[in-house]
Length: 333
Length: 221
Image 1: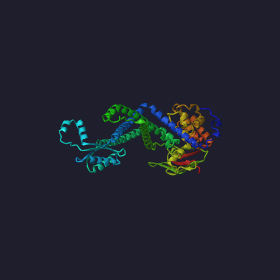
Image 2: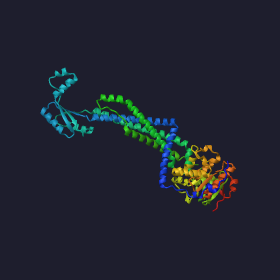
Image 3: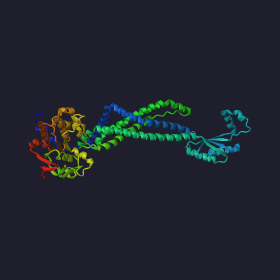
Image 4: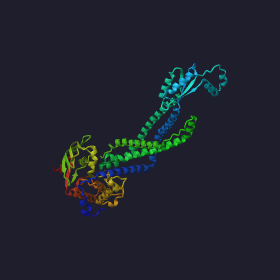
């Protein structure tokens, strides 16, 4: 297979001088850099699609790991928004001492109504209270046998819109209790408080779970990338030999990580949507029982974007850490 | 263009690959580097490529001392040197064209320029018609020529070759050497490590001979 010798001028022309490596200017460099990014992004995705089974498995694992904390957090924040509505209905029941006459009661009601934290005050006289109690309790006959009405005057305070936090309501309750003639103030909020505490616990648990699972995703991506790096060891050596910078060598693997993360986030999004759809029926009947606005938790567009961003970031980060650790050990020898 | 200044290289474990080696190669020169295997030829080339750093002495390439070169600068340094390996170091999962285009892609050339330069380089080594082939379908000599095309596609000032004819028969070897002569004639400094004394002694270029890490002949000062 020897070729006939070609004349020198045909093979190498002097105009095509080899004495200095041709310099590329800044614009060319930038477009080249950008084009390389595009090529690497496409190339990495293509490599993943060329091995559909293992890629889908990785995407599923990442997706499941992300879907669990995300759906829990959507549920918790849904419950939180519902409980916020309950919260705004907080009322203070003020029981007055027995020996007060109507004039004093009205004066007291007026004083309380003048407080800036108070929106309105409704007075319930012992007679009204008794009538209400009779109709609700079913002890009507027994109550009618009493000589006198044992119930005190009652004032129902609705706090102002701007004074709805539990702290402000606590303050208000203390101030009202210190007024002369007031026997007891009951804040009808304790169960809301308890729910809130549980919600805070739930949020923290979701955060802890999410952190652990995100670490897991990071490790999964890192390990997968490590295998990819190993399988392309020869290529890395050659690229380094012909002058590929670390960034150049790292790039395809970072894109691989990004695709793993984004794909996983997409799977997670689909899973979350499915779970929420499945829970919608029971949730709305639960909400009905609490006479609350229907609770329809959803991820929303913003949430979906955040999930994608989070997944992509995890992928990039996992790839970055792994590649940086392994590339240094792959040097041409 | 390339200067070694009393360079020694001791590998971990105490093996002395090079001892006090000093020589210099002018630009536009073609020099052969010879010696038995283990004489230090590969180590010498690796020092030029910054695949290794000397234990003592200094290496100067292109008027730049490699001593203080940071790790970050190494890729740029390597882009200015073309290298041909005995085992070709081709990527077998991509075409001849893509293999040759690799240094240009790394340097960030526009695709139009890449096409033009790759074809020019393939033309020089006589493989223009094979650009779409996969390297595995080529013969040993053709694979070596792809390696040469990749080494020269970026028009480096310095071309290194490590046993470029190691696995080839005499006719093919002569042909490959002739290619290197042609690059030398357009101004590329060429350093070829080879133990094929029969072939290189026919060619009348300077020969640097190493033996057990020491320079025997050929190091003009």
